[in-house]
Length: 118
Image 1 (tube, one colour):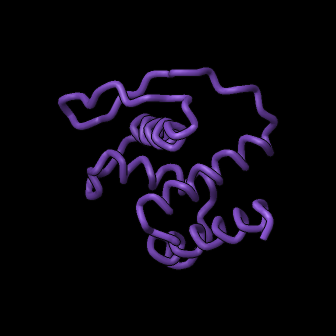
Image 2: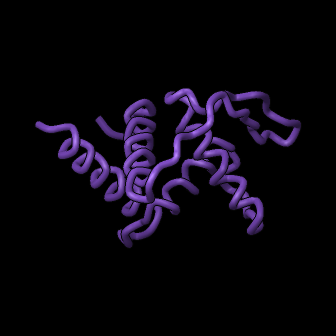
């Protein structure tokens, strides 16, 4: 099976499982999934977040997702439990479609590592 087809199938599995679990089956988009990963990484699942905190959660998720690619590294966790990352290597300039593929691949790998999918 080609890498693109395998990624597409795994991505659809992630979207399906998360949509069923968190959105009553309504299909979650890429940003919503990144937000959920941010909440998971923060570990404060029952908390309500303000708009700026929601953006911070998405930043946490993106950093976490790109750690295996060598772009970010965990620097420290502050007294409120928020992880902080620093840039190890600047992201290359990518077209919108390339960014989407990179994030989908990183998300699929994240959920494989956390054993949410096979």
